[in-house]
Length: 458
Image 1 (tube, one colour):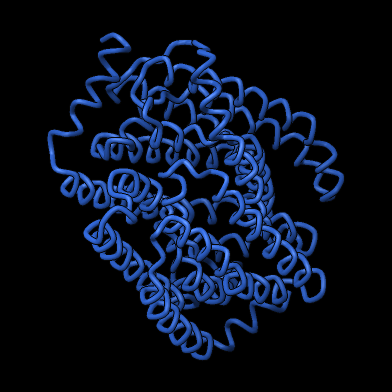
Image 2 (tube, rainbow, N blue to C red; image 1 turned 60 degrees about the vertical axis):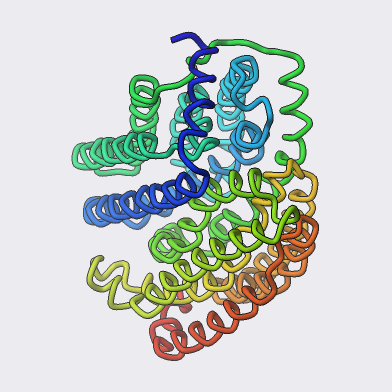
């Protein structure tokens, strides 16, 4: 199949079904992908925590945070560019993005090599200096992932993509467990990650149909990507502070053992936000692109109904996790991780507020308004960083969590500004959801008061 045939085939397949049916199917596949993926991650987590130590998980949490940071600090919005651009199905455009992704992968690896030992000294963790660059090899592999992944998301064709992603995840987990049984150290997590990336690349190249990428650099395509992506680049720097800042800060406040326990609680508690981001990223950008809310009352009604259903689902998951926290950790993990139960309750309660405005930023990306997206992300990052860092320095883990909760409230006006800019703000939805979230969070915190207080004492 030629590149032109691959791109046109994807574009032609999309209109074969109604947008509503494709959107519904996309949402269902996204939930299935996330749900089954989380079940596999949990199973892997339970097995690995019995083989490896909390220190191993604490060190890998730091490594992963900085790898994510380097990825976000070099993000030019390649995926959103393909999903929102009028040229999103053209081979020249896709090949240019693929070539840029490869260059970026090598740049991330080079940055990891330079940063490894200074960070090892900063955190007083000599092993970090070796583990970090080794783990960064997966970034080189990731640069070669084909753009047909984003093309499938652009056209809400997620069935085969989901099956392949789940297969990739299962193979990666099995490789990591095998490595843990042999190595019984943090290196098992590192090499499991790298080998998993290689399997992922192979699977997508063999089993996902679409345009076959070639090295190409078209000046017009590059200019369009850079124009859209420059604000995404700045936004993802802010996103790093929002989504990884807690572990970077706690790496100095807590021991690696305590950080590993915190990471277990975080892994379970962030399911609602991760599920919401998974669905919103693949569902709402195409929905906003094809049915802008400002164009008609019918578009507004469809989007409001979809948003309300997503929020109800995410709040329900957060409430269940908040109430099940301590007994769930006690059931799943050995006594070394008992404190993660109280952490799970606290973070799940914060998640109840975080998931409410989750879909609004997709409207800006769908409209190509990466600058507006950056304004909101930078505002949120400034507020979040000040509150979280200040709280952690003054009061440790309790201060950090209180700072996170306050940040959700104080960042809301910036989100409203972006939503109103694109005609998608739904104040009734936000008010009802916030009321339910506050009541549910207060009830859960009161019901598990002892576990939460115990987790806050190192």
